[in-house]
Structure formats: C-alpha cells, structure tokens
Image (cartoon, rainbow, N blue to C red):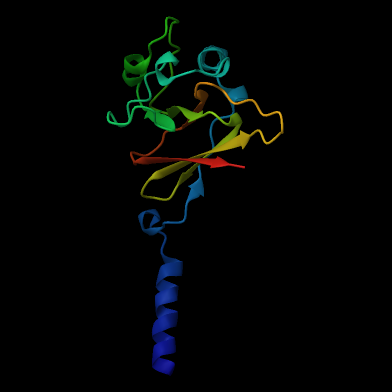
Length: 177
C-alpha cells in the first residue's frame, strides 16, 4: 500500500512542479488592449467599420472574414486573427484608408456572430490553453413577450487588438444567456 501511495505522490509532484507551458492545458485569459489605450486613428476606424451597425449578411461586412469553410454558406460565426498589415489589406473590402498597426507587437481579431434571435454581444473572452486559442462570444437574447424576430440573420461584429498572439489554431464558441 505504501508503494502505491509513494508512486501516486511522486506523479502528483512531477505534474505540480512542471513549469513547461506547453504541457499545461488549463486555459488562461488573454487580455485585449483597452480601446482607450489605442491610437485615435485605429479606434475610430474600427468603431466606424465594425461597431456602427449590424450587418445583414457576411458579404455586407467591410472585411472578408467569413471564408472559413467554402462548403458552409451561412456559418454561425466567423473570426480571423490578423497578424500583418498585408493580411489586413487583403481582407478589407471597404473604401476608407486603413490605419497602420504595429503587427510586430499586436494581433488583431475581427469577427462576427450570426443569429436571428440575438439582441446583442455582451463581451468576448479569449483564452490560451497552450495548444489553441479559444474565443467565446457571450450573446444576449431577447426573452420579452413582444420579441422581434428579424426576417434576415443579423451579424453582431466584434474586434479587439491583443498583444502578439502565438501561432495556434483558433476555436470560436457562442454562449447565449
């Protein structure tokens, strides 16, 4: 019995003492850069292009972010991690001049959630578990009796600037309250 207890304690000690982040799978939060700390040019551009309206379809957005799966005609969400100015230029379909972003220090996440029953997007949480980036959008639903059903799907866009993100796959989830 003591032999098994010793082996169990040794295994727990090895796991507890490991400081190699690649071995860890517990997600940790990745904080975005507060929008108040961004340059006025960057903040004003993305607020005008991404936050001033809700779009009626992926093709109406000023960024081509919806091409995740060409076989899926209406994905419930679309999201991209932008890691270079060139990549940003390639997906932008609008007419305004793009702001310069220091992509050596930052990564930009652009996206949207598609839903006919959503009132709004409360907030976004980004986590890193060492293997992939996990983005969760917390959506707010209208549960009132006079609820208005949109005849077409509505896209709730979002954007955030983060400290440079590692090259990991991105998984996106929508969480409704």
